[in-house]
Structure formats: C-alpha cells, structure tokens
Amino acid sequence: MGKFGQFFEGKFMATAAKIAGQRHLQALRDGIILTMPLIIIGSVFLILGFLPIPGYADFMAKTFGDQWLTKMLYPVGATFDIMALIASFGIAYRLAEKYAVDALTAGAISVATFLLATPYQVPFLADGATEAIMVGGAIPSALMGSKGLFVAMLLAIFSTEIYRIIVQKKIVITMPDGVPPAVSKSFIALIPGFIIITIVWILRLIVENTSFESLHNIVGELLGKPLGVLGGSLIGSLVAVILIQLLWSCGLHGASIVGGVMAPIWLTSMDQNRLAYQAGDALPNIFTQQFFDIFIYVGGSGATLSLVFCMLFLAKSQQMKQLGRLSIGPGLFNINEPVTFGMPIVMNPILVIPFILTPIVITIVTYIGMSTGLVARPAGIAVPWTMPPIIGGYLAAGGKISGLFMQLINMIIAFCIYYPFFRIWDKQKFTEENQTTSS
Image (cartoon, rainbow, N blue to C red):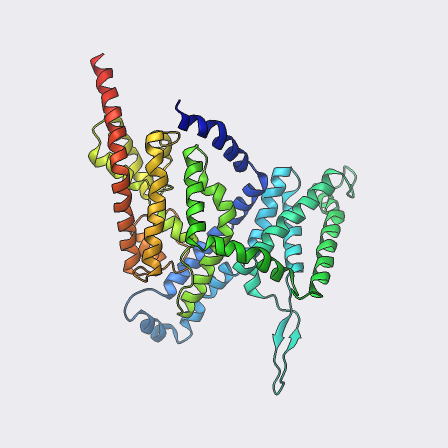
C-alpha cells in the first residue's frame, strides 16, 4: 500500500468514521429526511401551477376560475410551510432512538418546545390607526417552514438530551406493573417534559426583554446568517464538495455525513427560491439542494454517470464492460454504489483523483453559468435526487431549457476528466485478464 493509501486508512478514514458515527449528526440527517417526501409532494403541485406551456395559465383560468393558481398552491403551503415542525419531531425521534429512550415522547416534547419558542403574536393595523398593535393567537407559517429550521434543530437536540438524562437517571413517575404501557409512558414523560418546557419558557421570557425579542432572531443572527453565507458561497460549497468526495473515497457515505450539516442551509436557500419563483421575482440563490443533487452529482456523488459511459462504450477489459452494463441502470437514477465499490473507486489512487476533481470543476462551471444568467437557477422545486438526467435539469430550473443543457455540459466535462484515468485503469485490468488467460 502506498503513502496515499496509508494516509487515508490510517488518518483520514479513522477520523471520518468517527464523524460518520456521531449520533447528533445522524439524527439531524435522518430527521430532516423525514421532511423530504412532503416537500417533493408539494413540489409536484408547484410544477403543476407553473407549467412552462404557452397558454397554460389562460386555459386554467378559463376552466377553473381566476383563483385557480391560489388553490393549486394550497398543498405547497401545507408541505413547505411545516418543514421545521416536521424536522423538530423527526430529529428528536431519531436521537431518542439512539439513546434507547421513548422516541415518540421525545418527538412530542420537541414539537412543544419549538412552538413555545415561536412568537405567536402578529402585527395588526386597525382602521384609522397610525400604529400597529400586536395580536396573539396566530402561528407564523414562515417560522414553521425553512426560517425556523435552525431553531427546530437546536431545540430538538436540546430537549432530547435533557429528556434522556432525566429518564436515564430515573427521575420519573413510575406506575405499577399492571398499568398499560402507553399510560405508564405518559406518566414517565411528565417530569422531564415539565422541566424542558419550563426551561424553554424561561429562556423565551428572558430573550423577549432583549433587543433580539425571540429565540428565532438570536439563532438567525448568530448561526443562520454565518452558515448561510458559508453554504451560499462558492468557496463554502467547494469545501463541502471536497469533503463529500474525500469521505466517499474512504468508503463512507459523504453525502449523508456532510448533508447532515449542510442540508438545513441548502433547504433554506431552496425555499427562498421557491417563494421568489411563486411570486415571479428573481431567484436569490444559486447553491440549493437541487444545485448539487441535480446539476453536480449526475449519476451520483462524483458525477460517475459519464464514467459508466466510458465503461459501456470504450472499455477493452471484460470486467469494465460487464460493470458498465450492471451500472448503467442504477446510474441513470443517480445511484453509483456499483461503480464506487465495484470498480472500485474507493481507496483507488488512480480513480480517486478524477472522482474528487470532477465535481469541483463542474461546481465552478455551473456557478459561472448561473451567476452570469446564461443558465436558470434552481427554482426551489424539490426534484428527487433519483430523477434521471435531462429531465431533472429541466424540472429543477423551473422548466427552463438551459437547465437541461447545463446537465449535458456537465456530463461532457465529467467524461473528459474521467476518460484518461479510466484508460489507465482499463488497460491495467485488460493486462491482468490476458495474463490470467495465458497462464
């Protein structure tokens, strides 16, 4: 094993494995994934509301009335606008599972603390009044969606940690053995639930007497904005891409590990684009979840679909030809484990180089295309990461043909980068096969 392999196995891989097994990052990743089916469903209605077909809007208005678009977008609000609420439950639930405590109770307490931390009052200007007054009783939908995601994440972790400490120390109300389990669990939750809600209530009272006014404002200023700048910049995105590729090079699921940290940032950017797209305004963000899922990782992490085409059409060794035939089906749906582990790319000094280099180059090229206006930015439509190329680019760009061409260009770039390294690897395998046959 060369120095390259020794470094990855002895240093980087050990550290990466510890990060991958970190329970809080896993809970963040798995909890946020709980929101994805709803967001995708909402995106279907968003697409139907803005189909890029000439005369579509007029036809729908004549058929269903002038309010057809508002009604069509009802499911969009019902899915996108509860993103943080669902995440607060999902993150707490997954974290509690890892501590082997009642996950359902932990999720319920997390939701309650999130709602408690959210200001219910909204400004109201009465007829003839010159100054707005605050009216209670309305839950702001914006804070239930992407704007409240960071607060939901932090409170989910905080509430579950307090809950499991109290339960594990057995500071709970226990019921006799004859009591049904559901009733017993509800009594067990009383003391930890009361303590957690009281702590968050006191925090809210304290913060309301400061210039921040709410926990949402504190988190937004101190955490959300700096992370948003990092995740929304070219440099920050390139760092994320490099980390994803390095982790995959060690055999670890880089997208899941890095996504646990970056997903809230990219989902928030996606939702900002979605709101702008609905309003017909300019899209504010380039780096969203779909920027990476659809435009960068064509064929999976590393943009390996182009490498599969190399195997299918240019391979000389039987091993590469056979692997190409096996990988093309999954690769069209952006699943590349047959390539990364079957070729393999993992721990392979020859193929790791283009595996890391390709997404970096594609990210820069796509950013230039979108920042200059030559390519449409992601429209905030949650196109599933398994969407085949060409279709995915068209839908993610809000029905703009430039999104389709961007994917094609990226695939060509990836092909050009992978090809010389593939030739070296294929030649090596071809020589091995000939030596085996001759012996």
